[in-house]
Amino acid sequence: MREVNVKINEVPFWSYPILVGENLLSETNRYLNKYSPASKYFVVTNKTVSNLWKKSLNIENAEFFEIPDGEKYKNFETLISILNKASELNLDRKCTFVAFGGGVVGDITGFAASIYRRGVNFVQIPTTLLAQVDSSVGGKTAVNNSFGKNLIGTFYQPKLVIADINTLSTLDERQFKTGLAEVVKYAFIEKSSGLDFNFVDLLSKSVKLVIEKNPIELEKIVEICCSIKAAVVNQDEKEQGLRAILNLGHTYGHAIEKCTNYNVYTHGEAVAVGLQVAFDISFAKGLITEDYYNTASELINVFDFIIPEHENYSPEKVLEAMKFDKKAQNGKVKFVLPNDIGKVGIYDDVNREMLLQIIS
Image (cartoon, rainbow, N blue to C red; front, side, top):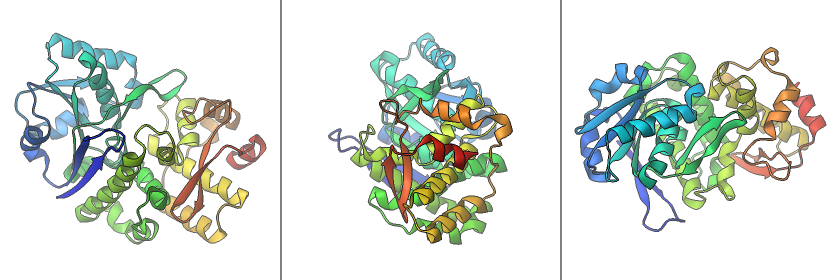
C-alpha cells in the first residue's frame, strides 16, 4: 500500500492520508476507526457501485443510501434527497458521511457533509480512476446548475481517502479512459506543482501497461497524480492562485459538457479535447516549442479518447458557455496554458478570433 499525505497550510493541524493499494475495501472499518471514528457511517453510493462492491466493503454501523448514477443527477434535487435521508435517520453531528463511488457521488456527498448540521466528517472511497486521481482529493465539493458545472459548492476536506485499485477492474473502457484524461493532465502540470516525476516520459513509456490495467502500474500512477494534486492543494486550498493550474483543459472541456447537457460526452472526453485546445493555443501564441507540442499531442492521442464532434455543439455556443467558467473575471475568460515541459501559466489574453480558428 502507498500513502500520500495532504497537509493544508491554510488550516493549522488539518491533514489526512490518501491510501492507495489493492484489497483496501476489506480493511475499511479499521481505517475508519483510526481516522474518522463516528456514531454512524452514512454511505452514499449508486446502484452500479453497490451491486459490484458493497459486499467487499467492510464497514460496521453503517446506513446506505443510493442516488441516481450520472452527471445530470449532480443537482440540488439529489443533494436535498441526501440531506433529507440523513435527517430521517436522525444522524447526529458525530456521524461521518462516506462517499462510495465516482466523482458525482464524491462531489455531492462532500457538499452534503459540509452543510448537514453545519458540517460533519466526510470520507472518500473513490471507485473510478477519475475520482481516485482527481475529484476525491483536495476538498472541492459541488453541484451543477443551469448556468454551468460545479458553480455551487464548498471547499470541505475529507478526513480520509481510500483508493482501492481493485475497483478499477470493473470499469468499462470508456469510463476508464475518462480517468486517463485527468492522468494525462497531471503529466503536463507536475513541475508547476513543485514536483518532478518526469511524468510525461514515464506515462509515454507505460501506455500498454496502463491500458491493460496493470495493478502495479495503476497503483504507481494514482500515487503520482495524488502527490501532484496534494502538493498544489497544500499550497493553495481555495484556489486563490496556484490551484487554478489543475483546470488545464477544463475551461473548454466544461463548456462542451454544458453545451451538450452533460449527457453526450464523459468529463474525460471533454477534458481530452480541452487539453489539445490548450496546446493548440499555446503553440499559436509561441509559448511552447514544436517538439513539446508534438510530444504532448501524441500523448493525448495515444489513448484514443472519443473526441467531441461539432455536430453536437457549435463553437460559438462553447465560447458563450466559457464566460461562466469559475476562473473568468470581469468578463475575461482565463485559460491555463502550457508554457514549458510540465509547466503551465494562467492567461487572459486569448482573443476570440484565435479561439474560433482553433476550435473550428
